[in-house]
Amino acid sequence: MLSKFEIELKECSETEGWLQLLFNTNIIDEDVYKKNRNLCGRIRKILISSCKTLKENSK
Image (tube, rainbow, N blue to C red; front, side):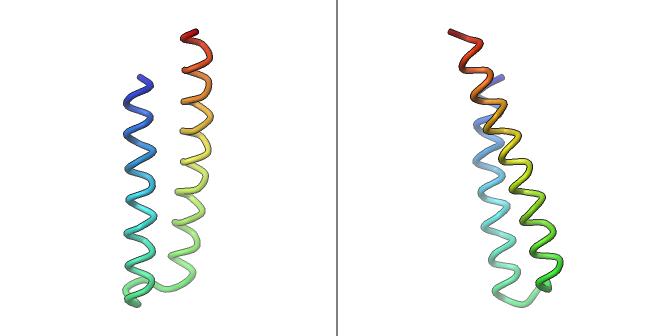
């Protein structure tokens, strides 16, 4: 389970990179960019917390 969450953390970072690229090339506007970047940030925080919990519980 932990490895799956860690992979999803990488996917979240990749998504943020793509969002940045789309915004920088004017494919999406600032509102769409900020909304989706914030969602990625929330998901990242949940995944980080879940990874920490799984690591602590596996000790």
